[in-house]
Image (cartoon, rainbow, N blue to C red):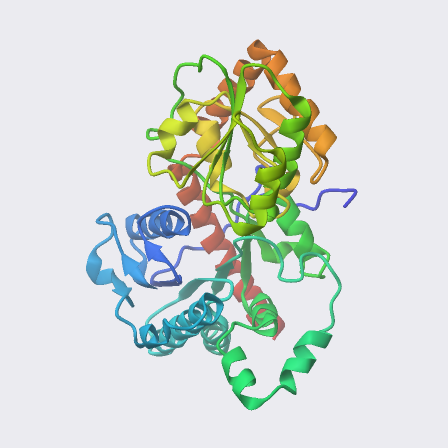
Length: 411
């Protein structure tokens, strides 16, 4: 897109003026408390509880103590466990649909004036919210389901599935369909997106900009903090070792550079699709320690963080690395945090040469690299702590109330 479109939640946007909810219903097909989406749910519920309007949350488990346990309904011992023998896409699809069924019944029982769910988890509940005139929000963890591409309502593959044998169709119904997700976009009053790139995929699908709210991630700035510079140049990648994260591009760029006295550390689960790339471009200067529990210490042991993802919402690892005082090299597809030349370098996705040049620049200019890392840490302290995140989420709830009121007027 040539010109940026104003979206609520960004620094330049006007803050919503609507009132906060009185009783919120929240649901997520993850745990409350932990890492990843679990921490996002945790911090959101802390904000709602402190704001005095958390009614109930429905999730797969509760692993925190900041929010009273009686306000969180855990589905840990749900009957869908009987289907755990199925392949993971079908099992997780069944879990999402069961969560949605439970949540829709809870919302219909009455007493709530706002619903907050997640894309793929909430179509039934959003139908209830629309019918009752209850303001609603859904969070989108990555991009629009069509990823900015024009697609018919039913693709050829989806039409073929409608004519498949009944046993195959029955199994397929456990999955959350693309059509259900598209219906969620239409039903929700506010769509919570995580980056400019993600927002563009919705705008290209004719979703009006006033329906979008930017809610970038945040980080625990006390847990993640800078450490002393390492003795050698160490480039760190954190995330699943898959092609969607650009790991194969990073490996090729690293081998092309052949930097002296330097190492690349790839932290995360090694998936089968990346093994051939490791065999081709790996070596003694490439480490794959696997999943790491003390990730904060690994950030402190690095010189730079490299995250050349091809498709993300707003990756939490970018904020963790920034809080740890690291300059970063990332694609715009991985989020908006890095300002090119200030807190790191932004490179085009799938561009091996551009990525290699950026790594070489930060390797060859340690003082510039350190200054970028310090700027990143300051930006986290100014805008990206969990306190900042919770304040932005309150603005999103205000916007949902405004949008719901406007929709009722239009109808």
